[in-house]
Amino acid sequence: MSNKTVKKLQQEVDDYISQFKEGYFSPLALTARMTEELGELAREVNHYYGEKPKKKAEQEKTIEEELGDMLFVMICFANSLHIDLEEAHNKVMEKFKTRDKDRWTRKDS
Image 1: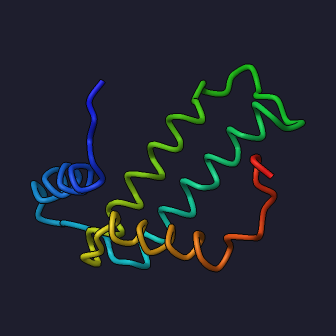
Image 2: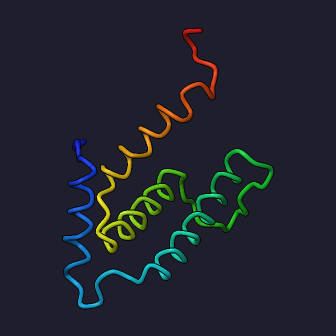
């Protein structure tokens, strides 16, 4: 198992996409792809935790695989717009630590 940073993940995806003349899809196309992947993730969650079991002939996929697909598309989206996901994550965490600091019941309370 490797320990990849977010920067390494973004670089790995960029190295892969940079091999092709087409490059990254447009933001609109990536939004559509992310929506498609989210639908596939929702379907898997529904199969495992919801009331809709898989059909016998349906291909076996996992939530892990679908989350991986989502992550890939999200990294493509960020890379195409030159967004540092680590920086974006840090901004979101700061928001949660300040704005939402008293929103939830802490375990140590």
